[in-house]
Image (cartoon, rainbow, N blue to C red):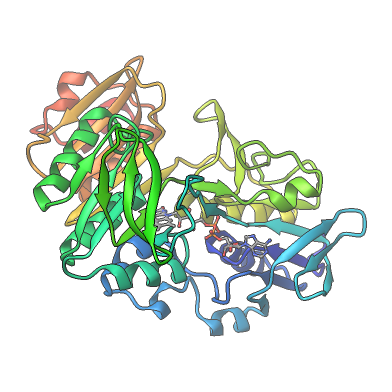
Length: 412
Ligand SMILES: Cc1cc2nc3c(=O)[nH]c(=O)nc-3n(C[C@H](O)[C@H](O)[C@H](O)COP(=O)(O)OP(=O)(O)OC[C@H]3O[C@@H](n4cnc5c(N)ncnc54)[C@H](O)[C@@H]3O)c2cc1C
C-alpha cells in the first residue's frame, strides 16, 4: 500500500483507535477514516465494571484519546454510524446513513456484543448486559442500598460488577452454571479463593445453577426462576455470560470466520486488503500451538499495531504473550499466558492471605501464571511464562526465595 492511500477502519474501539494512531506513527499520510456505531470516540471498557461503575472514573476519563489527538493526526471519525456491508470487488463499504466509502485497505475492529440469554423474560426491563457506556450507566443507576441485583455468570465482568454493587449496599446474588466461578480461565484453587472473598464481602454465590426464566410485572423483571423450581427475587438482573464476536460483516463478505474473523500472524485475512484485530479476530499463536481469540486490552492494542505495520508494508508477526487483569475489591488479579492443558499447579504464598501467586505447569514448564495483588512480581512472572521456564516446584513454591533469582537461575 502506498503511504498516501485510504484506510477505512470499521469499529471505533480500543483496537480501531490504536490502529489509526499507529498508521500515523509509521508515516502513513493518506486518509484514515474510523467509523463507529456508538456515538462516542473510542473508549476503554475495563472501567465500565470497575471505576466508572463506582463513579470514580468520568466519561471523559474513559476516552482512549481525546478529540484533539484525532484532529492533530488527521484521523476522521464518523460516529453513530454502522457499516452495513463490504463490497470487496469495488473495495468500498456501505454506511447506515446511505453513504459509500472507498478503501485501499480495510481494517475490521468490530469487537463484539454481549451474549444474551434466550429464555422467557430475557427482554424484560432491568435485564441488563454490560459492554458499553450506555449499559454501564443503566446498571449504575440500579446500584443503590437494598436493591436486589442478580448477576448471571461468574466470570470477570460479573464478579467485578458484584464487588462494586455489594460495596454500594445492593443485595447481590451471583448465579453460575458451572461448578465454580472463573472456571474457563483459572484453576479451582483460584476460583475457591475468589468465591471465599466474595462471600466474606456479602455476595451470595451459587454454582451449578440452571436458569429457566425471568418473571416480571409491568414489563420489568421481578424474579429469576431456576430449574430446581426455586425463585430469587430481583429488582435488576445483569447477564454477564461472555461475548459474541462481531463477525457478521466479514461473513457476509465471504471471509473465513471461526470463533472470530480468521487472520494470519500479521492480522491479514485471506483478502490481502482486509485486516482484523482485537476481540473480533482469531489468530494463530506459535507460543500456544493453537489459534486464539482473546478479549483483552493488551491484545487489542498490540494486534492493531501489528495490523497497521502489515498495511504499510512493514509486517512483523504477532505472537505476544497474552495477559489480562481484573480488579475486585482491593485485589488486583493479573494473569499471563493461557493455562489450558496444565498438569500441575504451584501456589507460591498462601491462598489464606490476599496476596499470592499461582503457576500453571505443563510437563515441568511454566505456561501461565496468576498474580493476586503481587504487582512487583508480575513483570518477572510474565518473563517466566514467555520463557517457558523450568523451575523445581518446591523452589517455586518457596516464597522466601526471590522470584527474580529463580528466573535468573532458569535463564530467563
Ligand atoms: C465490562 C468490561 C470489563 C473489561 N475489563 C477488562 C480488563 O480488566 N482488562 C482487559 O484487558 N480487558 C477488559 N475488557 C475487555 C476489553 O475491553 C476488550 O478486549 C477491548 O475493548 C477490545 O477492543 P476492540 O477494539 O477489539 O473492541 P471494542 O472496544 O468492543 O470496539 C469495537 C467497536 O466497534 C463497533 N462496531 C461493531 N460493528 C460495527 C459496524 N458494523 N459498524 C460500525 N461500528 C461497529 C462496536 O460498537 C464497538 O464500539 C473488559 C470488557 C468489558 C465489556
